[in-house]
Length: 103
Image (tube, rainbow, N blue to C red):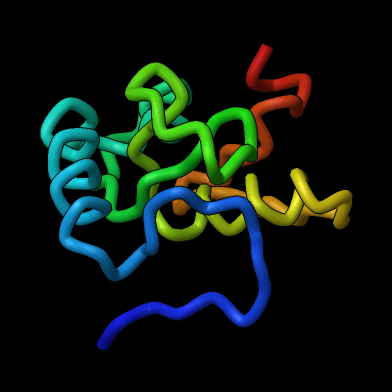
């Protein structure tokens, strides 16, 4: 299924395009584990590619990172100015990287 944006969102590569899939494969080969989870000592496979600076036209490899679905959703919500709820993992540790237990 080909992705067609409903409005101009600044993307230089369409999400469903062959070029985006090639770039996605490169990023996920480099970041096979979610970089946000790894920072917390959790090993979760990365499934999504995120633009670090939230600029969809900046497809520089240094601006792309592999994230799991939940981390990507939280980062996107935060980038859009929405409140982000984190919760905790199965051991009861807070998932919010800014929680004082994670400092």
